[in-house]
Image (tube, rainbow, N blue to C red; front, side, top):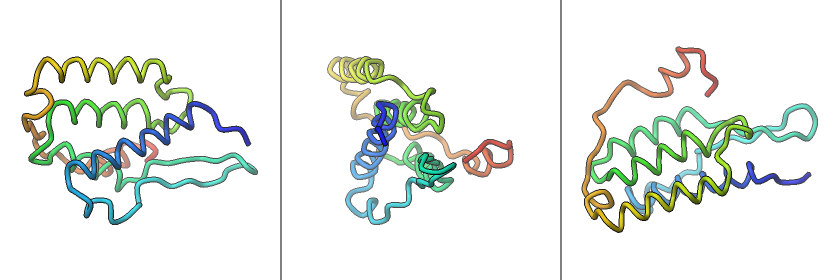
Length: 137
């Protein structure tokens, strides 16, 4: 089975999310690996799903007291463009590089963007909202 670049983007999104988890919560935040489920559908075709717990965890990271605007942007990029169930909707590698470069350039010029905490205000449970709206989690 060939591994596509879209699969690589998914995997990189997992790595980035685990890195941000470590950055925001320390090693203890990595004690369980319950972020993603991989199943096999129709023969040998793999299927990955973002677990409801991941959506809730990302919400928690956005609300964390140390979360900067840069971290918000990276989390939004991960969840909105890297961990898409449909591989055709995932960001392409060259565009990912462009986005990360924009974040880096802004952080170089604006230390507040990089370091100043701006946690998001808590909202309803993300996974409950998605499930009740009929979205696949």
